[in-house]
Every structure is written in C-alpha cells, then in structure tokens.
Image (cartoon, rainbow, N blue to C red; front, side, top):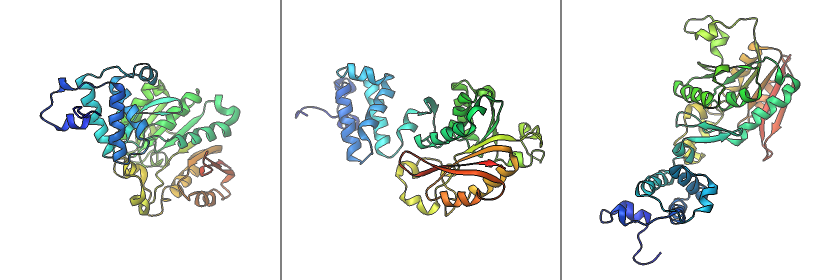
Length: 322
C-alpha cells in the first residue's frame, strides 16, 4: 500500500476521512479483509472474506472472478468491514450471512440454532440406505432435536410420501425450522412440536401435550426416528473453538459432563415408539460409539451398525426395532 493510501481499517476508525474519499474495489476489499482476519487467527480467512463480500454485494463467485475491479459503494464497504470485524471477533460466518447449505439445500441459520455440519449429512445417507425400497412408502418419521430443521427438511425432499414430526425444546429453533421447511417447500408434510426428545408422544394424552401429539394413536408408531442430539461434554467446553463455545446455542451442544446424557433416554423412547422393523439413526459424538452400541445390544434391537464419516470417525449409529 502506498504511503498516502487509506486502509479499510483506518477509514472505519478515523473521523478525518469521509466515505467519498475511499476508493475500494472487490480485489482491494478482499485483500484488506484477509489481512484483518488472519491477524486475528480466523480459520479459513480467505473463504470467510469471500463469503461475506458476496453476501454484501448479493453476487456469486462467478461475478467476483469476472469483476475484480468492480467498485464498492460507501454503504457496501462499510457494511462489509462491519461484518469482517464481527467475524474477527469470533462470530461464525453463517450467523453473519444467515445461511448454510445442507444436503444441497439452503437453510436459514440464526444464533438460536446449531449450524448444520456436513458430517450430519451421513445421518440422511444412512437412513436412506437402510430404508432401501421403502423410501417410496408412506412412512411416519420423527426428527428429534430438529434445530434448523436440516434433517427433517432433507428427509422430506427424499421421502416424498413421508409424514414427518420434528421436535425441539427451543421455540426459537422451531421458528427457524418452520421457515426452512417453507423455504424448501416441504412445510405441508412436517409438523413441528415443542417438547423434550419425544416426550409428547411418550405421553400423548398427558396434560400439556401438543394437539398433534394428542392425536397420535398408540397403535400408529413411527417407522423412522432420526436425531443429531447434543453430545458435547461440559468438561470439553473450554477446548471448543470460540466460534462454537461463545456463539452456538449451548442447549444444542452440551449433554452433561460426559456428553452422553441424551442417548439412553432417546433410545428408550425409540424402543417404545418405533414400529416393529422401524429404523433408528443417531449421530454420534466423540467417543460415543461404544456407549451407544451397548445400548443397542439389547434384545429390543437387531442389525445395529456404526458408520464412519469421511475422516474415519464413528459418526452414525443405526439399528432396527425387533
């Protein structure tokens, strides 16, 4: 940078430089943003800088490559570097742009929901693989702890005859999930219920049970139950990346001191609520595979299996209700 040039950081912090004095194009803005993010040790700084810029200018990567000299307006660069500052302080890119892709679909994400991870797509893959030719049937599916709704919505796009129930303890998360179902045009086949795990169905006629659960027949059980439950140990909180620890909802992350608190009650409920031959598919946390495998070794289950993710880590447990 020449001696008389003004950096984005200088421009934003100095009262002596007017917006009109700033001449900034796409290439310069990206370079400035990368320097700022790298100075704060932000992982994948280049990608973050790019995604935030494309969000501000509402363009795609093709446009960026074709127009590196395109000028940014004063409002655009101010908005851009405000987002860069928030990312440098630890806020995840997805919460800044409000979007994340999952299963080839676009999802709204807010700080009320966990950001969908690529590894969670393995839950969908295992469910579809184990269902086989049953994917075209009229299935009754439950997604426990739906969060953004990524599993429920992804399954709804694949299981076209299925009726899906998605539960969560967070009313805020359910609002986001409903919007994602509407955005991806599957809202007419997903019911959203505020409850812990499948409690509303374990006692469907109990006081306070949601109306949809009260209509649930004891004879009409689920064919599929999937879940990406909280599975981070409280003891590991300090070692989490700041993006996760300080910004993602703790209720969607932590499962007691060991990180295993949700598996036993969820599997117990699935045992009661799955039809014979029904499928249970669970995402696994760190070191959860042995614990979950033991829970699925009872006579209530058959064909229990553990699937690894692309990194070779045990990621998904599944079993068939006997």
